[in-house]
Every structure is written in structure tokens, then in C-alpha cells.
Length: 451
Ligand SMILES: Nc1ncnc2c1ncn2[C@@H]1O[C@H](COP(=O)(O)OP(=O)(O)OP(=O)(O)O)[C@@H](O)[C@H]1O
Image (cartoon, rainbow, N blue to C red; front, side, top):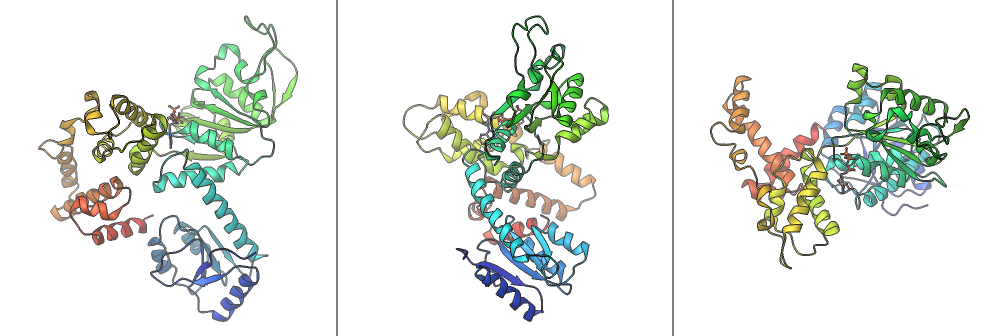
């Protein structure tokens, strides 16, 4: 099968005869390959040909200048040291293998490309519902697709309002199991230990007062589907033991019954608590923690992905409030100011208040912001004596930094904030800062080197 776009490659080896053979094998398998010259932007996934003689530190520096999401396979034409392999992976390469050591090397390339195509399609689809375009959010979405295609139990961690439930639902939707059934949500804050987990395991008629009929619990309802345990950190200790048994054995008993029943489901749990810390303190069972956290997905707080605020706000204005008119730039600028301890939910509520105050058919403007939501002008004037900026600078001073180092640090923060607030658009960020675009390009390249 011929690929639509050529598969680009860059040779970092002098074994040109072997390289030609290997490219021939790829061509024969239907891959059109094309050498990418230095300075050219990668048009899609690519191959890096290396060997034991390759200057890997220089290559790693080169990789740091590529866009963060570039999909790369390193193909070695000879054995590499383990440290070099890990170095390449840390530099952002997804796969490293020795062409002459593995069986079916073409198949490795082809499977990886196939997976990446599926990944890109599913991430683009997810972005319609799980809004965000920041690098860390895109990483989260890629991880989400990976997790959905694995069998592991997944633990979703994140502060309140970061989208844990949304992520769990998306994982169920992406789960490729044929004939999968429902996603059953259990809010662990509502489980009552006195009922011995009737909500989870079900009960027999007469098992306790008010058990007027036999009822299935969440495990039975989630059979062949997904069980989503929300706020798992709140699960009472006695129920943790029973849940562990059910997960280990795949069997459970209804409350008041002696019959073992089977349930097979995909487990997704979520919490905003630090479960690892709770395990250390003995308030959460270690064995259960290991059982539920086959894969851990940490959702970033909104304050760490401010580029996502504008698209999220736009989504809420358009989808939730059906506003079609333009949103004034000053409104977006205002929305960037809060720290959002309540994360996306807090932004959603703020957008609702603005949308509800908006009148008529004109654009949404700064006058639509309710007075109670106005910025804390004291905090905004942080540059004034005694403000946050002064506190920060004082701390740098006492760390022994001189005027130039302090100036450099403040400059770097200003560049980072401006780029983030302009959604990565260097031209607009440079305009805001009154500096050249090139100054910001250098800032970005340095940032990516520490990626
Ligand atoms: N990336 C996103 N795109 C669109 N809507 C989002 C996104 N993230 C969160 N939301 C919305 O924000 C609200 C809170 O999300 P959700 O309930 O999934 O968060 P949570 O982390 O489970 O919160 P909690 O821990 O408080 O239960 C929901 O209305 C959800 O639809």
C-alpha cells in the first residue's frame, strides 16, 4: 500500500550502502521516502537513521528544535548503548530499534505509522469535546487514547473541575472492545458503609431495613462495560477491602447472599486527593492502590494551560449559551487574569455569568462582566511597592542573584506569559511586548531544549 505523504528521513550515519538497502526495503513495502534537509519543517512522522558513530548529544539538541509533537522513529544500523537509547527516547523519539537485529523491521515502522494515524484522528475528534490546544492538554489527550486501547485499570488524578469525569467518559467511548456495554458511574462520596456496599455489590430482598426487593449493584450493571469510581479517595476502608477482593477475583456477593457472582469490567477511578500520600498515612489501602492504578493520568490544572482559556470560553459561549456574536478581545484578556482554583468548572461558571448579563445582539464586551467578578485591582498592581512582584524580586535578591540575573528572570517570565496569552502566536506576543519576533523564537527554542 503506497502512503499518501512521503515518509521523511534524516541520515545521521555514514553507512550509506546499508542505508540505501534499507530505504529500498521500505520502498518495496510501499513507503515513499524523502530526505528532509536541515531547516525544513517535518511534514509528518519521520525516521532518523543512526549508528554507534552518531553524535547523539548533537542530534538530541537538533530534536529539541523540532515542534514538541513531532512523531519520530530512530532506526539504528548497528548496536547502540542502552544509555544512548534512553537518551533518544528522552529527546522525544517514540521508538528506537536496530534494523538488523529485529524481525520484520518494516512491520515495526508500518504499525507505528498506522497507530499514529489513528491517534491523530482520535485526538482531533476528542478535541471537539475535550477542549484545549495547549501542548500539555494535547499530551493528555494522546495518553487518553493510549489508555483507552489498553486493558489496564486507569486512575485519573487532578484538582476539582479539571475534567476527570469527562476524561473517564471519553475513555469509555474510545474503548475498542466489541459489544462493550454501559459506563456506570459511582460517586464514592455517597457510599454508606452501613449498607456494606449495596450500591456496589447489590443486595437481596430483606438484607437490611428498606431492602424491599432484590437489586443489582454497580458491578453487575458495569459487566462488559466500564465502572467509573468517582472520588475514589472517599471510599470507606471496609469497602476498600471488599472492592479489592472483587477486583482480584472478579467475583463478589450481593449483600445478604451467599452466591458468588462474576463481573468483568474496565475500571476507571478518579480522585482529587493525593492517594499515594494517603497510602503512606494508612488511610488508603496500598494493595487497592496498586490494583486500580495500572495507568495513572494526571490532568493539568487550568492555571498551567492558560492557552486553553480562550478556546474553552469560546466553546462555553457558543455551545452552552448559543451566543453567535463576536466576543471582544478585552473579555478574553480579562478571562486570563484569575488563577481558577476551581479550574474549568470555575471558568464555565464565570462565562455563564457574563453570558447571562449580556444584552441584545451586539458583541460580548467588558461591560457584560458582573461587578462582583471584576479583577482584584490591588493584586493587579503587584508592581507597586509591597506587591507580589516586589516580594518575588526580594526573594531572588536574597538568593544572591545580581541585577542582570534578576532582569533575565523577569524578562523570561514576561515572554512566557505573553506567548501563552497569545496562544503561542509569536507575532502577537512580540507586538504586546514591543520586541522582535526573533527574540521570542530564541526563547521558544531554549524552552524546547529542556523539554
Ligand atoms: N477540556 C474540557 N472541555 C470542555 N469542558 C470541560 C473540559 N474540562 C472540564 N469541562 C467541563 O467542566 C466541568 C467540570 O468537569 P468534570 O466534572 O469532568 O471535572 P472533575 O475533575 O471530575 O471535577 P470534580 O473533581 O469536582 O468532580 C464539566 O461541566 C465539564 O463538562
